[in-house]
Amino acid sequence: MIIKSEFQPQYAHLSPYFEEIKTIFANDTQTIHKARNELKIISLDEEKMVVKSFQIPHLLNRIVYSFFRKSKAYKSYHNALHLTNLEISTPTPVSYVEFYSANLLKNSYFISLYNPYDFTIREALHHKCDDYSDVLRQFAAYTYDLHQKGVWHLDYSPGNILVQRMEEGYRFSIVDINRMAFREITPFEGCENFNKLWARDEDIEIMGREYARLSGLDETVAISEMKRHNNANKRVKNFKKRLKKVLRGDFSDPA
Image (tube, rainbow, N blue to C red; front, side, top):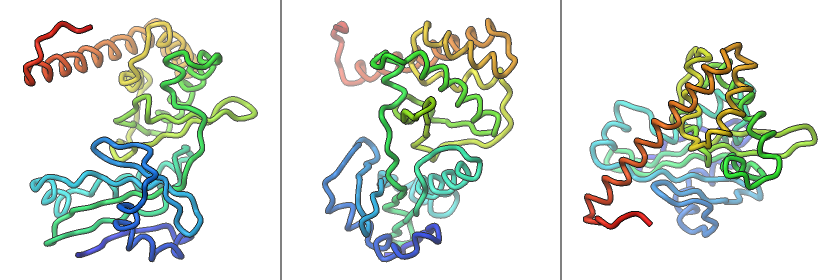
């Protein structure tokens, strides 16, 4: 078994844990999310960490990630370092670790410090907090700042945006950052980045007005573009849901 890893110098004392992270992860029970990938809260030498275990790739992707592309764990770690340099909040990157079998990538992990937060942007979009309009307005300003710094989050969805209430306003942090692009972003292009929020029209209007005010984009254009992209994403998602039902032979009418 070959192990490849990187870690920030201030966490060098934890390197023995990184080498054993596969075993440590398997034996820990504090799962906070499990789908294709799994996240657990794990204490390493009394330091609270979030460890993300990426799904083992199928054979073709094992070859691709071993020889042609960087792994998701590698990209998560290096994207987090870049975001930190840009002064954009994301859980502090600690390390990434890759395990190879027969020279092919098998298990991979991204380790970051635990990031306390009060809720995700989903709660504001579902109006589950009284101050949702303020949260959405400041979230639009936060997104504009991301775009000004050339950051395009390709998984900018409700569960990947953490919100913490501060004495003045809110602190937003982004997670699930292995799919990102760093490039120049125009305000008109930026409207598309709100498309995965599954937002109501009234909420898009709140965010659109603030994004337009900061960017100089015409308010009507900003709101119209956000709604267009939002509705297009909903159509694609709903089509995929209907297709999955057909493929598994479920022809019942939706409830």
